[in-house]
Image (cartoon, rainbow, N blue to C red; front, side, top):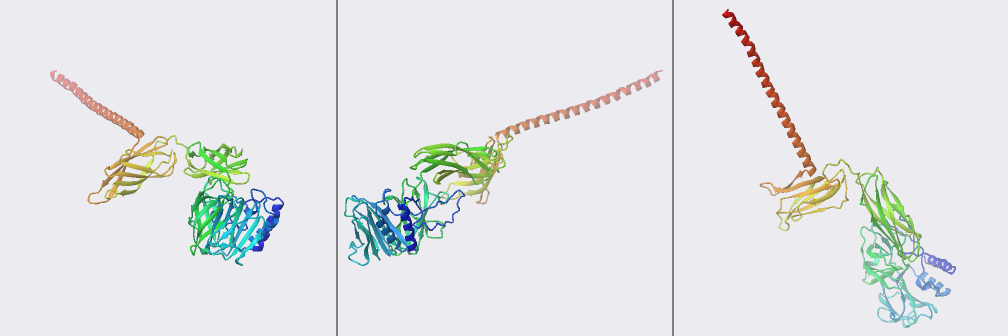
Length: 573
């Protein structure tokens, strides 16, 4: 492995001298080992290749400050270390800083103190944890491996545990200092976004992410306590406590951080099994990207089947260079298609641009479906930022919707007998299968409190859950539910008790809406008119029958009288 590292570094040396630039890694000291992660990635999460970047003693503000012999000597000494790690790294410019401290734990076998300067030969002194000055002339375990006018490397075998101090007597020279060692304890890191997905490419300036630390060779580690983001000169940017990552099988820790606006390194601190402080630093600098993307809805969050929904995006280039930014959109449902205008913008450093993303919903989409619309802005280097909004698909409004929403209870909690509570609770749900739920309220807020789960205006074909808390002094309350078309349902919730028992019950009596009241009144009037019509008709028919019978009787009487007269006449003659 040492020979392989030596070969890789010598190849890098040749590329540097021929003017070949290398990109910067930001995950682990060993770029030959790819990170494995069991978290699923979105299709657009494209991995970027990373290559190793050399340490600061061979670079300084973009100018070569050491000769070829110093570079080769440093590479060889680093390659001789088994299981090389970096404990700390600084850029020292005394005054005011004239010394640095590094903690050496019990797993460090060999220690390399590398001091590189721009001009004269570096001058420094190393003190062990007992306060004694260590010198190559005092002990065979302490040797000056490289001693040139620009670079000095002191090697300390079997260093004692504790805090070592490096002091710089000169007040006029700037030094780049790196403390290396041989140890089985190392770590690697990865940035996770708010959805639990590892970031692909560089993190975004000012974004809130989870920094996941995976401990390698951690059998001798008791606990990791904190993670530090530091500048390339070693100044602390922020420090956060580390906690165990949930659901991870390995020794993995996590902390929530905000990405700074400058290049930085990641360092950790912890304790080994002997309670000695552990310090490790990843030398590969992390170079954040300056893309900010925000979304604003220009239309309501519900969209009808066959309709459209408009989002306004805003891109800010917080980076240091200008370039093109491509804007795309996607979702997890085939019923949505997108039109992005403009889909590509050119931004100088510090500039911003706006555009629209129109979401088209298929007429075959299933009402009640919810989907995340993801908008992504990608720069020319392949780094991107994305933002998302949830869209709810509803049915088109029904012109014949005259029905009030439905109401039902799912649970009843009676706390009126409890000394700690003075309310009774009702868990309920409402649903409208036509124009959708618009508003849910209660008639009296002084004695009752209503809480609803979040729902979109016009949500249809899906129940919406709610919670009622009513004071025990109040025995009934009315829940008012409106749909988009203005149909109102008023539901009376009554609290009562069965005699001889302590159990409580809630009865629900649905009252009709105002439109239903008008319909009922009209129906009653028509029914009354019909009844009167029938009554008058029956009365007339009865009267006609009575009149007819009377006429018949009269007619019979008239027929009998002439016969009598005839008989009388006959008798007269």
